[in-house]
Image: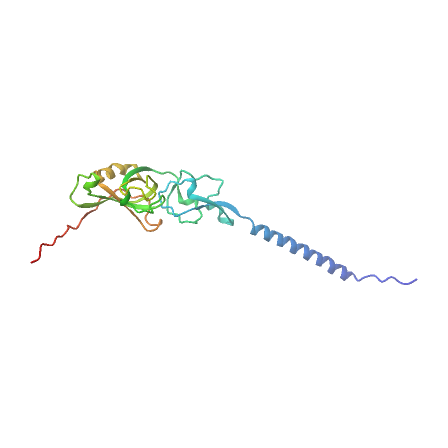
Length: 232
């Protein structure tokens, strides 16, 4: 009878090692792909928001991101931040850090009547503004000394309402600008206004300034008008 040729044992060992290497590569690849797709939903700012802004649902958008070990430092969408106050400015598209939220807010909201022509057309919630009081007899002010006073600096705008829309809107329409400030500062702000008309100035960039400043009054004399006499 012909003799049977048996394969060498080292060939069997190579085959087993090859299969193990293939299986290991498949498992490692699967873990890499799974880890790459391990994203979580967190909140990001929908627009620039100044420090002191009381968050509303429309201020935030949900985004899927991979954060790995730092995920705990950001606010997941399972947490509702509406009603909480920003302790620092957050820029559009920035993920919302937990550290940016104030645990307790001492702010109140003060509604200020402002003539539409005395506020920028783009005035919007989330901006920081300075508010000046000016003498304007047409607006019913009793102080006609021609002084301009800063009555509130770096205040976060919480809401703007009453703005006229369309070409038929009256230029003298009064809008309501709601700002946030410390409750203890409200009497001083109202006293500094003294019935004068208000002018709102938007600061460049939401990141400027810290929490809402208390009322400070800086008097800046308005240049006196000059008149030329008749020439001979």
